[in-house]
Structure formats: C-alpha cells, structure tokens
Image 1 (tube, helix red, strand yellow):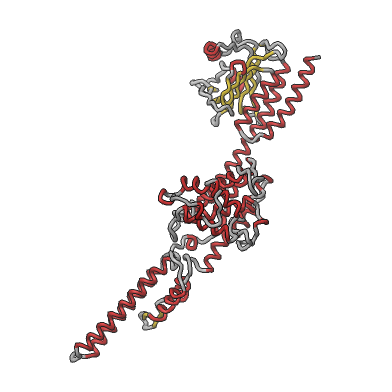
Image 2 (tube, rainbow, N blue to C red; image 1 turned 180 degrees about the vertical axis):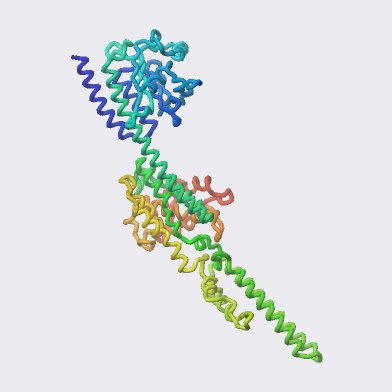
Length: 544
C-alpha cells in the first residue's frame, strides 16, 4: 500500500513538474529543474544531465548533483563543470558504445544498471576514479535518452544510486523508476526544445533588429551609434526606477518579460529613420545637400571679385593718362573698400553656414542685405543675385542647420516608426513595443509629436525612453553640427526640460539621484565630458 501511495505521489509530482518546466524561460534553470525533478521522483542520490553539442558529435556536461557528498556543479550553482565532453564516436569513426551515456544516446534506449562495478560491456573506469578520489560508491545507474518531437536525441539524463525512501539504503532503480524517468525525459525534451526554439527565434528577431540599425548606421555614421546607446541608457534608467522603493515611482516594477519588451522597443525606437533621406540626416551645414553649396557661393564671390577689380581698372582707364594722383587714389581706395566689404560678407556667410550659434534679427537681415548688395554676371551677360531664394532660406535658419521643411522630414521618422511597428503582428508579451518606441518624442505637457500625448496618456517606459533619447543626443560626440556637451551642461538642459513640461519630473529625479547619468557617461562619453556636477545648480532638482 505504501509503495502504491508513493507511486501515486510521484505521478502527481510528474504532472506538476511538467507544468513547471513549460513555464521556465531560463535555459540553465530549466536544465537544473529537469535533473532535480528526475532525482526527486526516482529517489536518486545523484545525477548528471548531458546535452548534445551543436555538431551532434559529443555529449556536453550541463548539470551535476550528488547530495550525499555535496556536489553541485553547472546550472545556477555558479560552479563550472570542467570535465571534457563525451565523444559519441571514436577516433576511427566507430560508435562509442563503451560509455553508458553515449550508448543510450546512440541506441536511443534506456540503460538500467544494478551495479557499475559488476556490469559488463561498459567502461566505468572514470566512475571508479571519481569514487577513489571522493570516497563515494557509485552503484546503480539509470541512463535515459532525451528525444525531441523529431526523434532526435538532444540530451541524456543519468541518475545514480537509487535510495530507499525509508531506510536510505542504495538499491536498484525499479521498473516504475524507469518509466517515470522516461516520461519526465520526454516532457523535459519537449520543454527544452520549445525553450531553445523560442530562444533561437528571439535571437533571429534581435539579429534582424540589429540588421536594421546597422543599415541606419551605414546610411548615417553620425547617428548610427544612437540606435545602440539609447536602448542601453533606457534600460539603465528603467532598472533604477525598478529599484526605487520610495516616492511616486515606488510601485513601478519589471519582470524579465517586461525588460525584454522594453529592450526590443529601445532597439527599434528609430527604425523609421530608414525612410529619412541621408542628405537631411547628415546635414552638417545649412547649405549642405549632396554637397556643401557654400562652394558655389565662393565661386560666385570670386566672379564678383573679378568684376570689382575689372571695374576699378576700367575707372583708371576712363580717367585717362592725365588723371591726377588724387583721382587715381580715390579710384583705388574705392576698389579696395569694395573688396574688403566683399570679403567680410563672404566670411560672414561662411560663419552663418556652420549653424553652431543662434542667429539674431540683425544676422538674418544681413544675409538678406548681402543678397541684395552683390550680383554676378554669367557668360550670356545676365545678372544674378549672389544668393538664391533657397540659399537665403537656409542661411537664415535661426538655430541648427535644418529648415522647417527638413525638420518635418526628420520628425516624420517617428511617424514611420509607429506605422512600421503597428503593422507587425506582435505577440502578447511584446504588444507594448509600438507604444514604448513611438512615444520618445512626446512631451509631458502635450506639446510633443507626433500625437501630442500628455504624461497621463503615456506609459512609464515611453517616458523613460524620452529622457534617454534626449540625454544621448545632448552628449553624443558623433554629430557633425554640434560639439558634445559635458555632463553639467546636459543635466542643466534636462533640468530646464523638467521645469517646462518636456520630460517627466519624477523620472528625471531618479535619473539624477541614482546617478544613472554618471554610469552611462563612464561607458560612452569621452573623459573630458565627465566634469564635476553641482546638483544644487541643476534647475528643478532638489538634492536630498
């Protein structure tokens, strides 16, 4: 009766184990659960779980456990297994049938051995050597192949020394032990195969994302690193918020699935940039298109210089040989004044073209005045202004290098991102990726784009990504149109953004208080960017 109750209990345990295995995402933890479950339902003192390597030629040690002598290696133990893998074939190509684990894998059948020291047909010299070193006595062995749904052996489960549940005496694995172990091995193989398949699909998916980001990187070396740095900073800040136990964000927590979802969103947050024209993304100066048109302006100014010099020469000729020195000096001085004025205007246009400083009203008017003041003549004698209307529009950009139309093109990348991501059939555990990725240009006050969402309409994750995106852009050292900011400068700007409703104030406080900015800087910024930060000088931040 006791044996029947024990069997029923073990069957119940087997059912529970199957459910537990199907829910485990971590491969190492899954393998450990398989071995521990097999030991439990067969009352085994020890055991080893092997997996076939990628080439299918060896059995690799994954988990080892022997309770009575305290051996725990592989899995979550933190102790690496140093034993070499077992070859499934010998050097001459013959099957390795002398090792019981290899035999079980090659023959696809369970091997139940009562005593390794008296068993015939198998080489247990390694087992004897192990026993000699440890004082252990390896007696009974139950070795079960693990086969997936395709009938391919993916591992071997080996149990050692069946213990009597009452007396603890070492005995032989019973027929019920064998059947339970085979049933568990079958369930475990399915669970392991499914987990590996999911892992492979995730790896493929992430590789595809990397492919997209690399395409953006190839397209624009100035912003390609952005696609890698923003996800890293996003996860840094999200983890800091997850660890926060006080304040308005104390209830925010993330599971491993939540972390993976946010990671994917971070990697894809700028995927829409594949649709953005490269000459807009890489516009380093105001007149740049496929090339910097300041060169055309220079050419026109050289023609104008020629005309000024010719005009001076004609005036000298017109004055005649009897012209007084005073008249000739006036002609020369007028020509020199015109050339100095021309050179000054040309230098001003070069400076304005860089776009590193904000243009005031006087600067804008000067561009227009230069366009009116100077003209040049083509080979047909037709006169043209030194600047076209399009060049005037670009050179009078108040800040940066982009016109309003070009900024719309840049901003449209987030619309493309959302449209691309929302068109994908996301599984449930990744269903929030479009919202997280698509919200990093929104503002807390509803003045962001593309949807004008307010703070209450956005997830914490999307708000986290917004801060990461801005801070990375401020401190990036690969942008052609600006210098990389120091930490104190970037935090000062973020502080202003906190006050004017641009970014989430609570997240910004965590960003500063937990020194997320510093950990990011130590990895990605140049040493000269990492200056001393006076927390009391950051707008809107109250140091604790």
